[in-house]
Image (cartoon, rainbow, N blue to C red; front, top):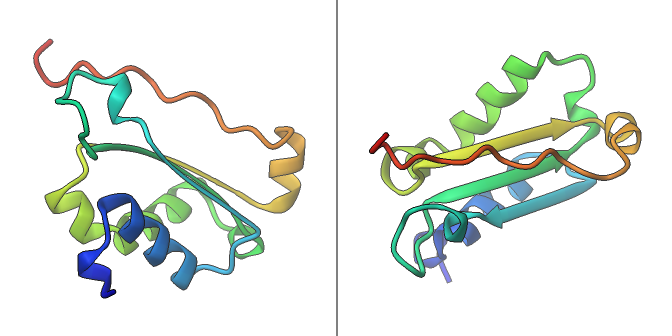
Length: 108
């Protein structure tokens, strides 16, 4: 199966896992928490843990993720919560990422 044939979540997982040496990856479809049709794939949270983030600012970490997912962000994803951590940061957070903020769906 080519990457184009994967679901939005599958493409996100494949692109991130291929581009970054990850100790931990979570891609969570949070669309059901928002005002979108049932079965939507438009709101995601990604949690990435990698030694590659050591010494990088949060802004540069997020820029890298946005660059890797630029096609999905331009076409499929309405909201993306990004949580990037080194293994030491991950342990300090006890293996948990913050909850995503509520989405008002652009109507508020």
